[in-house]
Image (cartoon, rainbow, N blue to C red):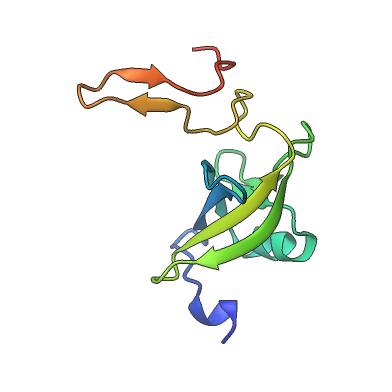
Length: 121
């Protein structure tokens, strides 16, 4: 069985890609891939995404140097999401936080910052 037998891109030709730190298990970010960015990722072993806002390929870290070296790719049971286990070369978030998920939502809807403390809110 091959990846193309299982993968289900959405109606825009995209699939969600959850990025997880390969060593710690921390979720670092969520991005979207199209067929081309997935092929680039498979070939180069560096995460490449499709930017929905800019409508173009986005090689994570191409300007900052904070690339995501892909160690493993998993596909979920429905074939509509990917998990990339990566070794980050620096902070993953554009705010310079380790993870894009540095804001915790309390049950009273209060936002608590619990990242590295470098993001400016």
